[in-house]
Length: 374
Picture (cartoon, rainbow, N blue to C red):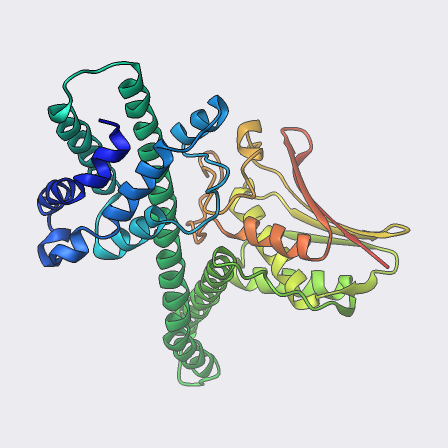
């Protein structure tokens, strides 16, 4: 009997076994009814049966066995929906994969019990069935992972948004205390530390919200206007100096630095780069921020001296959630989510600019930003 025909004619028997296995997956299956446990199983099996009957080239079969069927890429199938719903139901990836292993084993075992002989055509059917299940599993894993990422980014966005309220209250309270004549020098110092901590936390929350928005398809908005890069550089230094009062900065400006860019966003770029430089600078060494204007480009560089960044780290330094080791540098407590450089790159690219990094023992670590000027 052809495997495709067996699947179609024995669907209920196969589904009973599928459901029986799904019930053993705890705790996710404990609150799921029979219909939910069978969710999309029949459609996945029907698709596999149809696939067995479809003429395919060797390349198409090979792609399916790797989960790369071209005619299914990006399409909503029963398997993609199944993966997303299993994530919502609380199944983990291992449990999702075990469902497909159980389905594969049940179909082949039940089919084998009905066979009186096994020749090349049955072997081909079994191979085609395995390819179809591999494709379905890949689709389910992909949609499951997408659902996990979506829920994670939504959670981060909500968390970051909700934290802003109490932090604003702390910031206002610290500002009031800073102007109070009732505080002595020691208490004023404590209040200043609170204020700096609030600024740091606000920056982290801002980075978190930018990252979460980017992960759910939103680009960081950039609104260019006439602005002076020299003013933006100085404002960025002043902001970071407030959070790191012991850090040493030098600012070098050359020529007319007026241009057309988003000053608030570019200050965010510079603040993130300067904070990164503070974290990895050698104690007592100045961090140098320089800006100059070429014929069609504004070039801004941030240089610090400390332990060089290894070549393998340079390749991923702008990736989100990457944090380099601070071993060998002076101790600044980590106040980074590993998002600052990622967000800096996104903003620069939003201006159609470029950002590069080089690092060596002799020249230090240099981040170079180039913005085109109209």
